[in-house]
Length: 463
Ligand SMILES: [Zn+2]
Image (tube, rainbow, N blue to C red; front, side):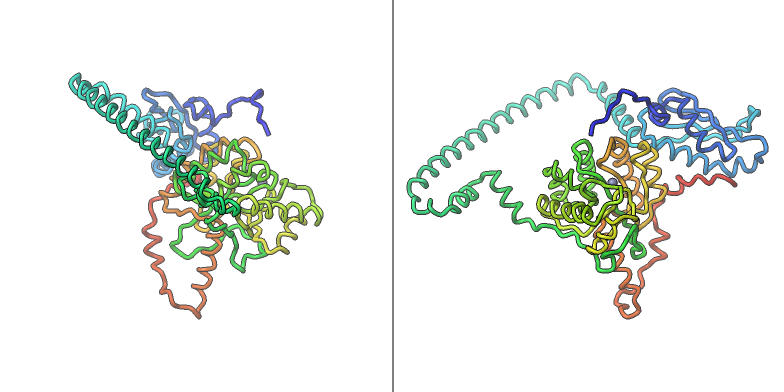
């Protein structure tokens, strides 16, 4: 799969991300127009935009004041999703169309990751010229002291390693000379090498000792279709899922981000890709993520029962052979339920796993991916994302901000098997027969929920 850029034209959102005022005006108007509001974005110094909000005539003055908070939050949220280093802040000025008098105005900093990064860089570069000559001289002296000590230590380490290697060589020749009876036993040399510190051998013996994970599902979900669960109150959990991988263009980047934020996700793999990229498949499982079956070839056309056996059984078998993981999760291509594949998967007691938050990352750019997820996130839901099947730059771009925003809202990321297990917990809690756990403090945890930006996404501005 290669992606041609020959006919590439930047989208409105990409232009908006560059701070293009016409694109920004067009975009915000497309969102606020239906509410009887039009805006005009103007450039201002130091990446601080000026946005003039015009209320159309029949709007009451009171309404214009009443909507102030929501409009400011809405515009700022949308600018935040752009994650643009060209937008550091915004001054919003509200007027009634045709009237030059200002109704209200407000300045807000946009703390998107890109804007924060740029601000930090600016602080760093502005603080560095303040260094006096004396401190520079001190710094240079300390640096040379440090470098020379590093050289000495490096030399000592090198000498020590050389000493060890010579010792090992001598030891080996001695062993091969002396242990001729043991040479008939094929395990002996490997064991001997494993004991001496050979990194390659040690890691392979470690891998063998790690238990092969089993991604099974609670009985109530076996052979069932699931797109979300009902976790116990106060359990703010959500599951990220990635389909159509593994692909070398995207999967390593996704894995790096997940590792950076210590997030565990679920990958629905294609058998054909697992076969082509076994190392990458192994990396997914080794880094603690769950895996599921997404068919061998991503067949969407009606498959026969014989095809179903190949698409599902062979994929699960290959995942087990290559990664060591056994999975009972199946996600039908495109979420289509009207196929022999789904019937077959149900027969084989898979949990047919759909999703309840549609990121549309295959169709839209990063700001909208972010908005689609944040607006629909709720405890117990499953988020659909992709690490294969096309250019997934939007997914990679949105992912860090998506994770941090949900973490700030108090969400904990779990894998799909973990999510399904949480549902079962709540069921057993609700049974009158097992009152062992006292009613949790629902009200307190709901009231104490961190201030979220969920509200920001809601576009209902009509009074
Ligand atoms: Zn798919």
